[in-house]
Image (cartoon, rainbow, N blue to C red; front, side, top):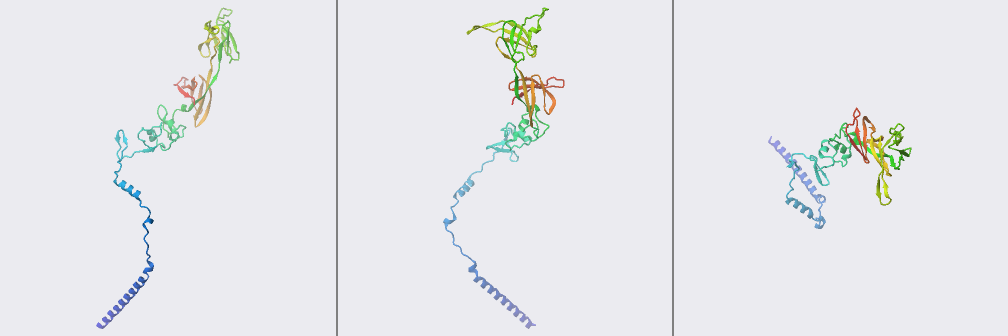
Length: 335
């Protein structure tokens, strides 16, 4: 029994010796190849490392020793806005705009509140010219609507359609009239009539001793004017000694007024017409309308308008009620 145990220990010793020999041999082999696997490097010269980053180091030091700039809160109603509150700010041309304040305006003439409340594209430089609801009125036109701004994102909410009505031209239909003779019957020239000359007597009587209407009437078809009276007048003149300024007073039956014709002085009783254009998405021409005449806007025929007056650069019109009476006055400017 003891002999078998001795043999077993001998075998263990032999195996351990073999492992130790093999491990030693492997280590020796690895040490022989170590010099070929390790490369030495020569340190570079200082000049080859590049210039020292002095500027970067100085900047870093400056930042480290400089106090940070304090946060300047936005002020509203003379009170600073807390840091935990969101503020819509826009930087434009190096100026900051707060869209929750109306001063300064980011996109004049529109107010910041109008832009903000209607969620308009405030970053777009031409936001005022845009028409988000496609009703034919720009954002600026909707903002400027009277008596109050309309909704630029609701096609049913827009300024009056007459804002798109423009005077294009005042057409003059001349009617010239001149007293040519102080002698009875008095010659009156109307060169724009078919008949150019008339002879009238405001004091003429017919066979029955009544005022002679035919002898007193003239113009157009012979019934526009009625001679009322004649006064002989003269004033000193340094060239001819005396100048005839006699006057013939006539009644304009068409216009319902009275005028005085002065000897040799031409007057132009022009009748005017006005030409309008309606510019909503497309341009629509409206035929010329005389003073006192009526018209309707294409596409909006439910309302009739009457021309009250025609000036050189504008026209005055009035929408008519159902009974034909005027309902206020509007000025349509030339443009």
